[in-house]
Length: 278
Figure 1: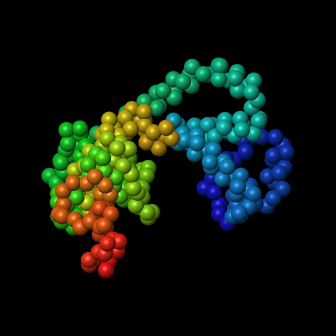
Figure 2: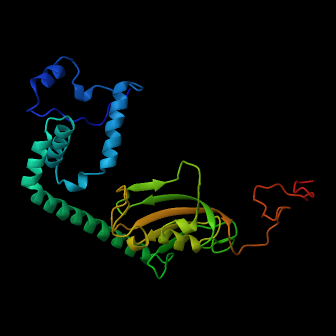
Figure 3: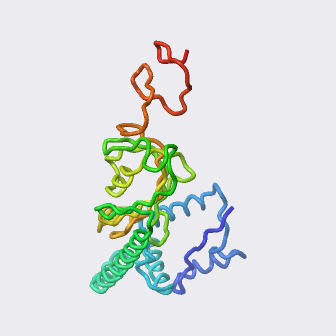
């Protein structure tokens, strides 16, 4: 079993039935463990899923009291305590003030994120081992490939590559990562411009850190799911494991009977007419 980090406490204005139900047990409902595999766990998972769809609301509140009232409004609406007519009346009365608060706080969050990203990019560019491209993308080589830095097969814009990556926001929040999972394969034509520019400067086997300005990432809009806010610079640690197609450079390669380059893990020796080792 597990205990969720928090549950919303019933408000003082809750009905007497709710208070009676809460007092009927020696263990407060707010701290009851949820048994794994139970129906309670399923309903709790539904709440988590809905909250994830709603997104992170914490940047829109300034303290715990505001967060408490926000959560209270959500719960009262969801459980039907606040009927449709009352909801419409409240929003009509406070809608203008609400829009003002949302815009002001969203702009403040955006400005903070943009300034933090610019500051990190500036610091990154001061490192003598980094290279800054015309677009503003910064590359910091960390580990060389088997043939040394800048040597070996490099991808082109038409390439498909296999990579490991770890992406963070300026505050260190991890928004995506393949670490601990299988490597990811994708065509360079399908990634954000900053990724493409950085990988085009890397050789097979290399690991590098990329600093990507927001205009070379997800721009002013951010991502639809809210994981990457608008105006955010992104920072990726990328290992270019293999260039799977349309690569250039590197030493001569052996090819099989099908005309395809032999993989590094392929066994050595002569090949028969069927392409298999003799």
